[in-house]
Image (cartoon, rainbow, N blue to C red; front, side, top):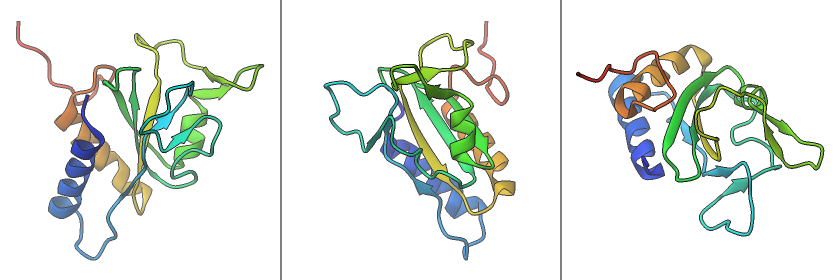
Length: 144
């Protein structure tokens, strides 16, 4: 798992090296638990709370139950994009809409950035740094 601190450090590195110095740094959320149960240690947010950085442009990170990074994506509106993946089930618990996941998503983290035009660049940078298992664009192929 790329710890939240490692992710924050990479986002800060991107901010320091590639963004104008007058721009505010991206805001990184805590870990959001999609399927909260009895174990809530270290989780800042959980279903059905509002999505972290809802309504803002940025990037999001989706993790499995072991906090292994599965996917990094970008969004004009983080809340709308996350709602395209996850919704309420009949019992008001979280339901994963997408069926293409090889591993079930469990946690997520968001990072808001000032303007959407910056999100694709940040997403590409982070995919290159972390090589998530479910991203295909920007992921280096493994040697034979």
